[in-house]
Amino acid sequence: MTDAGLRERKKLRTRSALIDSAFVLFQRKGFEATTIDEIAEAVDISPRTFFRYFTSKEEVALSLIDDQLGALMDHFERRPAEESVLEALRNASIEVLRACEAGDEGFDPTRFQCVQILMSSTPALAASVMDKGAARMADVAKLIGTRMGVDYQLDPRPYLVASIAVCAIQTAINAWREREPDAKSSDLVDQAFRLLQAGIDYPSVQ
Image (cartoon, rainbow, N blue to C red; front, side):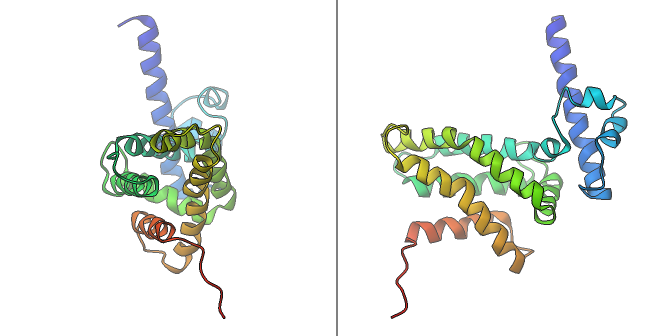
């Protein structure tokens, strides 16, 4: 193992330790009451060193979202070619969320549940999730364009589908969760995609 390799492994261990410590504090004190100083102290590093790994405590809390989005794109890319775009997105999304809920594929179900609670109780964090999804929009649109056989930079449809999948679905789920607080995220996503697949140009009341 080279010195560079050892340094990289140490950085990854420190980053992982920061995430672990942050979530312990989030669950004990809540997101707003937890400070960067406390997260850094729990790992025995300085707040200044903390900023070598994360720009904010929001970024720590949403590290799981990055992993979910990456897994979603991997699963979507592997879906059978005969599936339509929305069908493939629905199946990929459900696969990833069920892995999060069950603790498969390296996901921590306790951490996943904590993130759901944090997003529902912290509007600023929920907004950050939307921003994070929007930042990956081009990546999702590119994969959708590939499945459709079109250039996502020339055809507007891949971006439209990506926007619905990344932003609108999350907004709908947050609204539904208020009346179904115990519903699984995977079930809510399944419901949202099925409604979209059925079409949303509903008739007006005559």
